[in-house]
Image: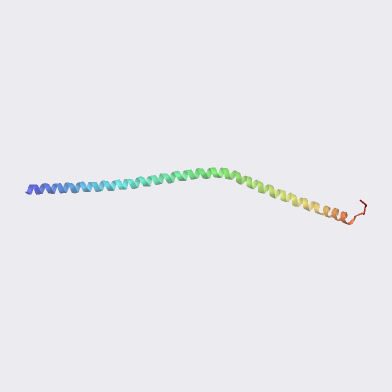
Length: 111
């Protein structure tokens, strides 16, 4: 009876050790899965940052040239306005004299 009781005790201890090893393996597996997930997220973030940087560079190249065109158009518009204003200032007096002389020096004629 004691040998049978002793055999049962050994079986229970072996079962407990197996259960402990199984629990430990599950913990290691969970830890490894969590670590793999973190590594994957880090790799995805790195890839995303790299692609965003490339996109920003391409966007800057394309939009930069458009920005230069916009600045050039603004500069040309301002130059045209300056030319028109200076032309107005030079010619306003002469045009007013001609207009007044035409209006005031009317000579009656038959059609």
